[in-house]
Length: 393
Image (cartoon, rainbow, N blue to C red; front, side):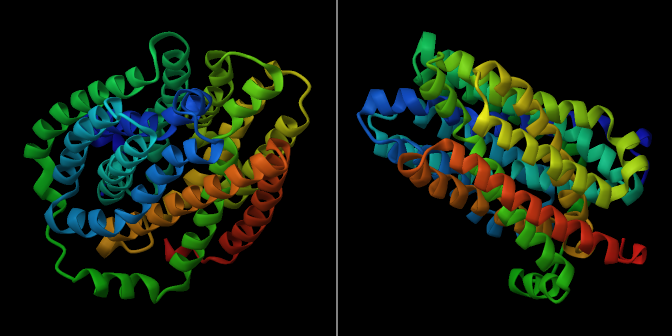
């Protein structure tokens, strides 16, 4: 494995482009929820299934993509997933009813599920651990920009073009990524193929160590807490302050800007705080931002609060996923896919729970509960990192 400066930059840029499309697809429906409620005459909980079913399918499909990436090469699998996502996005665009839209969102999540986890696994194969956190942060700038674009795209389309155009633009993004990645897969796709263990034996091999089990549990609850809250920020601002969906989307879009800010300073922060410090400071940022959103007296305050939320989230999550890339180097694709599966199953669970809480006791309670859970998780994870010997890396 090498320093990222030595090569692979073009591949990482293309993977970041694909991550941009996948992240935009994940978050596009957050800003569309009020428009879907009005357009289809359904409840908030029913409309929120366009978010939760995407995440559920995304998580479950990791069971397939991880072994495929280990066996046939990660880049060809990513390129195939991007190609399939073109079709599923067009299906969502043409959906005649809420049931069809939820179904196409589910298959969209299933198709996109390979992109970010297998990209992380490919980086884990190619980049030495001491350079990996910074490289992953730069790769994830595409994901962060996708978060911003997805939120804004949904809000702008809902206000000015109609919600269906959201999925047409997503299809175009996926098409650009797929064309570029197929060309790149021909050059590098076979380089990481060839793992021979069966899937069940890989799961057993990974699960023998307690450390992966710790990582899987923490990332499940992290996804539940962060994205259960994040999905309802536009709803909160639209209904509490009466702002348009475009303006409401500015706040969660700032989440991505906060992540980009973290990515630009990852090396300095890591050198100063080390992994356990990043986790503690990240959780503090998350808690402050979520409590601020719960108590805020103006929608304008939600923009800097969401940016702080993004900074804190990526400090915590990038530390988790860097450790995930080193859990099982011999079966890295499967290990990272299991990590992603836990993460997105957590997201789906969080959105489902939050949608019930929003209708019952309101969004401030969702934000506060998420803050408390994240502080608890970060405290446990930081303590586990301090106990983990450096030799394990």
